[in-house]
Image (cartoon, rainbow, N blue to C red; front, side):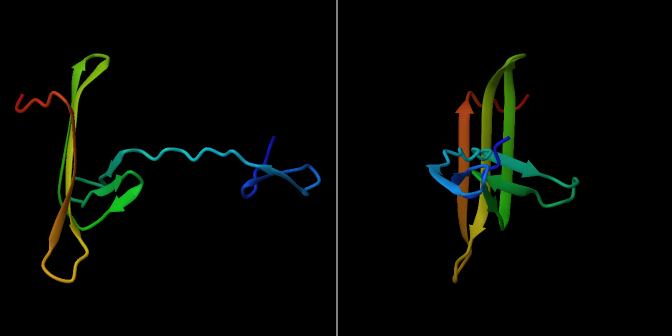
Length: 102
């Protein structure tokens, strides 16, 4: 077993060997939506960043067939910190054919 400490690979005698660790950081999820219950404010994590001051969250995913995604769509509106009037920022993604109504 190799136990990595810091950015160097330790030797068995715990003296640094000087070799650089080539650790690969895990890629964060693109989007995580957590909902405690049907009345709670969702927790949104977009590309590893907590999105706060939510205004609106839309998410739609549709299947194409049993093994393929047909479309993914999301739009997150949130207030940005500002000294003046509220400024709303939107994060949005649409991939595939987006079907309305079904």
